[in-house]
Image (tube, rainbow, N blue to C red; front, side, top):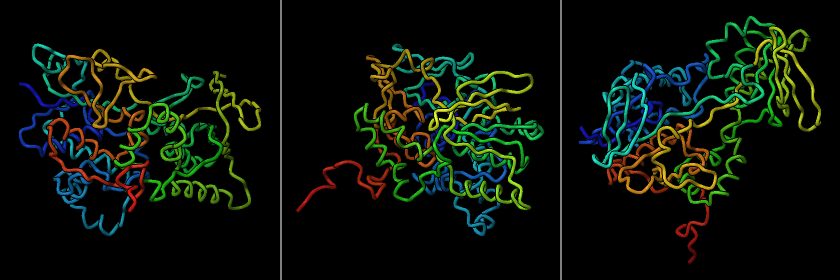
Length: 422
């Protein structure tokens, strides 16, 4: 059977695509995932943590609010609509989002788990992609790569630290140790630090290279940089401009929510009752430049950038909340890719289609592997449904899911139609 679409990887983004594809009559699609079941950052489903986007950023609502796999439909199926209504929650618990995605995946026959894809080739004879998974080979006109990201541990700490992605699996051990150091000041670092602070209240250190424990940009106009309008604008910029721009926008995606900062401060304040300062160190502007084993401890060499000074600290364990990197797609798409950009990366057009070598008539699309072409919104859940619909429209050659022409009040760039004068 020749499929219209094969999705590789089932995270929230390809799950969104699978859900929206299920409403397109006559579209034959299959989605493959190497894990035995849907899992969304299981190591960070800490009690009390919430999504940083509203519940409307589910798999489908921002494209199709009537879809039977919306978050509200999930609540109705679970018999929880009235409790949700009275809770007045706009940002839902992470564990609830994970449960919602599991619920949706179970209702999509196109989603097949425990199927690892080993190879994607172009078959000129079949005029289709041959997707090899185990002993099976699927033929598809189009392929969508949604293989997600992987944790980053900085070179000095490789082999000496846990990553926050695994936090819950090692939390009990960390709570019992004498001294724990958290490295990284994004939302994950803040959540890990807060959880350990509540459970330990002592022997805790939080260090980060950034000059401050900075809040995330969450103003309403600031958030318009996570709209389709901004993604289209960013895609139209020259490559060198895009590469310079992304690092300057770190507070859009590497900052800490104001609520989490407030909770940390409240807990620190509680620990000072009675006049004692907590046995806790918070140190911004400090980079880890070296690490070595010291018996059953780790000795860190740290450098304060502003003071241009170094020091050493001994700690029982290190947790790196140092983010994630896009997975290397070379094994899957490398032999198919056409000319690369100046930095050797795959090219991605406005519809998330990878530039392929001549002679390939099918299309390969990517989800959350295009920050270099579409900007900081690439990993944002709020753009999941829109990007999935954009890909489906390109696959079908028509607007099976109509999308809005304008999504932001802000005008990005000198768009002619918005600068006409009378």
